[in-house]
Length: 239
Ligand SMILES: C[S@@+](CC[C@H](N)C(=O)[O-])C[C@H]1O[C@@H](n2cnc3c(N)ncnc32)[C@H](O)[C@@H]1O
Image 1 (cartoon, rainbow, N blue to C red):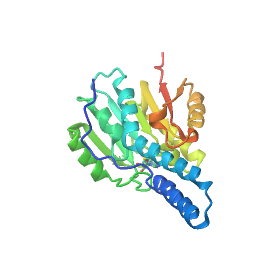
Image 2 (image 1 turned 90 degrees about the horizontal axis):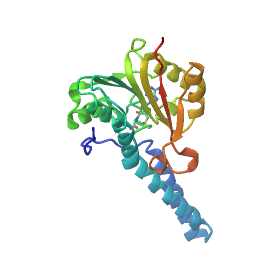
Image 3 (image 1 turned 180 degrees about the horizontal axis):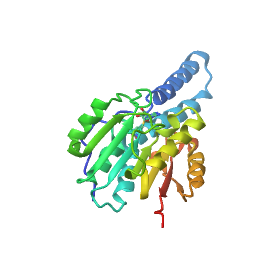
């Protein structure tokens, strides 16, 4: 199924990041003008290019990448999908289109530091705009302690959210919870800008075989050190 053009409003991820880059560029311009440090022009250009790449990723690139990922999956239409750190609903509401007889469930703590204008009411409004509100369910919950039964989701997704947890133990808890609620035979897609090797190791510890790959320039948050990696993993059925 092809996902039509988006109608919701999805904000800017970590809005302080592009603001800091622009502030850095302006500070350099100040030094060039008042202290005549001409070598700083290169830094200005680099900072402005990184800002443009970052904004492209958050406003366009991540939509294109997830659209391709979700359109490439085989859907029955009645799956239960869970989005960890759904924010304003970019992945959640795209997934909801694929499950007209299922459920798309989002959990979040609605941090406006991590996404501008982040709020459950905004995500619900986006669900209505996208015409999928009938199958969308939102919970205010920490992904380290999910309020769901074991094996209760067919698909678990997450986009650039788990790295926001400040400790390795906390991020491992989130992975453990994601695995716990995924049913045998289910699939998990986790995209993140850092720590994906740690997540991979944790999943290998459960006997899984996650495939890890780079999501390319459209998910490039302003430098190769923060390009986004995808973990794609299936939970094998017990025999
Ligand atoms: C950069 S935003 C990404 C939002 C969304 N996945 C997207 O791609 O548009 C990260 C999200 O993770 C959420 N988040 C951070 N820590 C969380 C936690 N411990 N439990 C649940 N959500 C969390 C934030 O509130 C925010 O909505």
